[in-house]
Image (cartoon, rainbow, N blue to C red; front, side, top):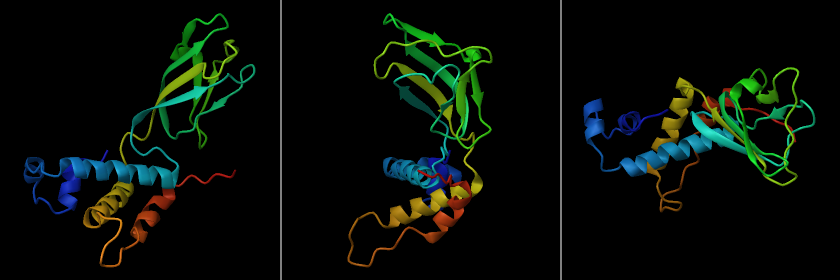
Length: 185
């Protein structure tokens, strides 16, 4: 993940790492810009670029041993799968009972070979899947794109100005393009 220190050095608020760590006046603003840059990049690419916990809530399991397509990529691990059984009681499936397939663009989750999904109560939101998604490290070219965005937003903080506003730097989209997941529908 992109650090405050790296962003401050890019913004030329400090020359050394020690100076960057000592300068804390704008930490809240810069952290907000880092978070916004990640959101922009993840929206543009449809990929999870920073490791975080994600949650998916479902109304039912697929029939039999059908696969659940997870809406994040990449997925490192399934942390939990909780569901409400037909009697209204809460249950959990252990990770060993699940098969996470990360070969496709969007990972899929299925029960282990030879087993099926358990029955659930016939109510909405009866299944909750929690996963760790995102890359272990932000790729260097994505970090450059994020830093360009942060610099642009740092210098252009208002939505309107006396001088003409500039578009987000074209190089950002060019740097993010290799990570873009193209979908139909």
